[in-house]
Image (tube, rainbow, N blue to C red; front, side):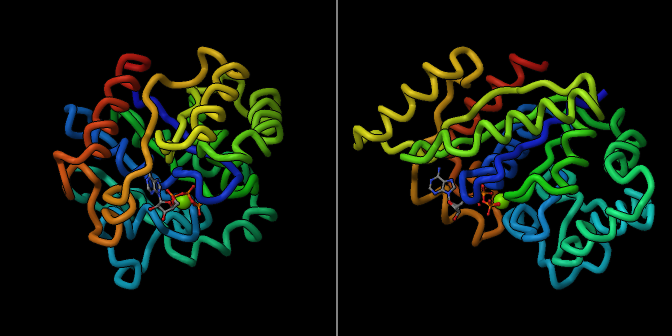
Length: 252
Ligand SMILES: Nc1ncnc2c1ncn2[C@@H]1O[C@H](COP(=O)(O)OP(=O)(O)OP(=O)(O)O)[C@@H](O)[C@H]1O
Ligand SMILES: [Mg+2]
């Protein structure tokens, strides 16, 4: 059975998509069978992994609202399976409101394929709407990327409350996978201070691996590649491979 991990933080631009793509690719290179679910209407994971969104006419929206068969929607890119998103998915936030089992739509869909994968990673939008709630309901664990900058801890309280609410009401087994520090700039004292602050607050729930800020990591998506394919020897590639090992230690 797949370990299902939702990558979430309602704060924008903290490294959710970068981590989703690169963790998926690194887990795959480590021999794991991975499904990456793009649950963000921005579709950044879809394009970042190399899919031309304009060329797709069926996506997660059709799975959530029209019970499309995953086999008709999933694409395989560089060994990673992708359940893509396009702007069409933005309609689902509103349309789900009137749907029955509206919080369980993603869970129901993934249940049919979970035995085919070791890991299912879900990249979420920067909000706590119904798409994110569907992810939390479907997931075993939430992985929270936190950017090591001044406002790092802002909003984490609401996020953790939301995880708790879903645990109580929709998905009793939901846990926090951990906090991943991202975009760490070792040259600044601020980054060190923030990292220390997050660690003193969340203690052993913070991953040992810290993702550095590197230009190569920000360039890779425009080439439609994960960093380990785009520049396998780069620092970013090395660190995401390390992070995959840390996740494998945690979940097998
Ligand atoms: N470690 C890093 N070093 C340098 N740039 C990075 C790094 N991680 C992410 N970025 C860049 O920062 C921007 C935001 O990253 P990303 O898209 O992964 O965040 P996000 O949390 O998914 O954003 P959103 O909330 O909009 O979905 C992107 O331009 C990305 O390329
Ligand atoms: Mg994103």
